[in-house]
Length: 440
Image (cartoon, rainbow, N blue to C red; front, side, top):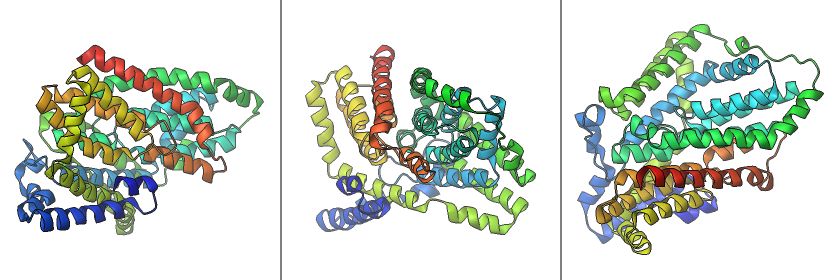
């Protein structure tokens, strides 16, 4: 399965669904003759338990993680509603106007916006809208948009590492190991904040001279006004209200005891209600149709495939190997998980890697007595930050470079890695120091 995903010859949801079907039929059915393993892997009964929606988690750690599926689906619907209401374009144009359309301050603003939005919204969506608006502003203000798009891509992955809902690996880690929004923001969030400050300085030094030259060469410019992004004021305000509610619910879900699945379903329902009342049923249909069902199916197949590895003991063998190589030393184990996660995520989709490693770090923690939280934060930082190193390391990278190429500014491996590979090594090194100083 992993090899097929790397080769990218077939759509990845087809790969994981076929892999999952083979696990259910051949491994659990033919080889193990275990209907119980099949039912436990499908994990459908958890949806009908009160704990799935409210209070202590009623979902087991084995099988399909339906909390992740429900939450991501709900956030996808909310983001589609925000996009149709013009929220993202309005926000970008407002920031550009705020800095009087000066390019270097705009670079800093868009890097900050990338990091902040990706703490709560899918990184692919953030990059898609930011890169598109960046291209629009570049045509009007006459500057090369590639430095700004590269910076946005990098900061999106940094910001996504800060919270449980920022990047898919964090969603999987959080729902599988029962961590809260505050668990992430107080652990990976602190590391992400430190790294973000360094990256702000790094990219400013890299691109400042070129952008200032473009600014000096520009004459008087006329840019689109933020108000042009809003075509339906009622839909805009209501969608922004739903987004604010989602942020509040995520921040307080440890206190309210609402599960992330419940929050996802709630914001999705409110988004569709707003769309229906402000734009009609046709808009509701368009939002539902725009949901990325391929990604949701990818997750379903992935969880089944990982369950097969876990049930057959393969992941226990990997955990034992890591423990043996490290000599059981906590510091060495943490470094291995962090750097191997980062290196792997630079070339392989970090979502299946994170899902596979969760049972591994759970076994290592049980066998060696290391705090599972420390291993979780190392895995999160490694997978999220490591994906920045190459144009294919994370989905946001692929989307951002594709938007740039479509706009007439192709970004090759050489130009991408010249700036981002070194920055990735920097943030992983800082993360290593952070983990050592705080936990080891």
